[in-house]
Length: 614
Image (cartoon, rainbow, N blue to C red; front, side, top):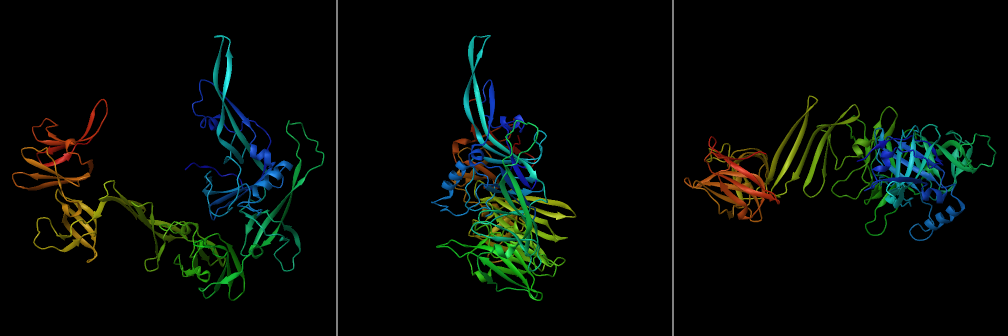
């Protein structure tokens, strides 16, 4: 995934110029077949210009790993206001206040992905055309936001060559882009909260009782959060006003400022942002009880959405409000679940709700109790895991995930100084043949990873005996039946040593015949040698080759881990290394110049066939 440097979390203002701020390499990567010569034109972003957008806000929440950017629409031009009115009136939006021109992006460390995330931060919002870009060091400028339309508009370019007295043709690439630079560097913003249809949300001077109201947020404004406490937000209300004053500044060739910012800082009570009633939760701890505010479930399978969680200290009455956007389908009084998730002796909470509808990979929100602050804190590491199982006996966290029908795995974690550390992982990927899977495991031992790769598969035979040793087949130690699953740890020419999971027995370990994990050898290959005959498993695709000794009239070797078309003419025998011993090969591909083979050469020492390495 492409990454960009993380810009500053502050107020940005449009940079009204068409100068080339990005390096030329930024543009040439999007120019397909530029021709013998080309020209690059930069024009203002049409959407930015048409709507008259001048300011943007950026906020970075390191706890959740989300950066939010919103273009303020207060400065839309007269024609832009009409266009915006048409955009949100009727149809899907039906005149609702929606966060127009806003996006949320995932943050990792000091980098941000330019691909937006659908986390419910700005639901159902219309956007401007093009892509959002950001960075810190473009040609001497720092912390820039860029809006660029890709791919560029392509046109033909004609130039007269006086030396040849003829016209030459090239290409003109026109990029639409606009840049915003930092305008006000206050304490960095941690969050942007859109007020939707909430009108008149008070901005208080302090958190003390009976404190005066400094201002009120209108519907459709952004609350720019600078600090987040238990039940209050320290935030800015940003008001854009016309600037009619005369400014005596040097002539820069840029249009004069026609607007100015009025920034009012104060406190917003979190509960003033909650619109739905509070629902008491069934589960609680000795110290706390919990309530949630949520929307009602929609028709059919449409789930309800959590709006906020309220945590109330039973003894002191102090409250903590946590905003949330997850959805759920169960009893709204049983969403908050109580459990000691980090094994520190203090009950934590997690929400029996999720963000995504993927039934195979379900993740929940976890809030860990901080005994020092007395508050519940969002744990990003735990919340990003899927299908979490908490094991208090072993004090570990187990997870599993599925990446498709043939690929899944899991991990185990422990808490080390309030941080999750992975100590084990496993994955299983189905091979193309469909009969075997490749397993990878890793275990953290003394700070180093010990990793293994081995195959596994299901039992095909109706019943297969398991032995301690392949040479001692009189006393089986167990039995595997059809559809039992076995992990192959070692193999000999005719046997597998397996660790199996049986429906009738537990932890079976021992040797089984290879035929037990393969379909029948129903295809007899016509090509053979004086000493050997060859059979293939499966009539559609060859997944194993059984080699029979004609003199002994029994199998001597089974080669697995192959996949060839079940076409007899592709199989050939001969002496392919000039040692006088019989070999065989299988055609894998051909082109106009040559034919490609996988060759299996007979080793006179081991009396086995070995695949020739490239």
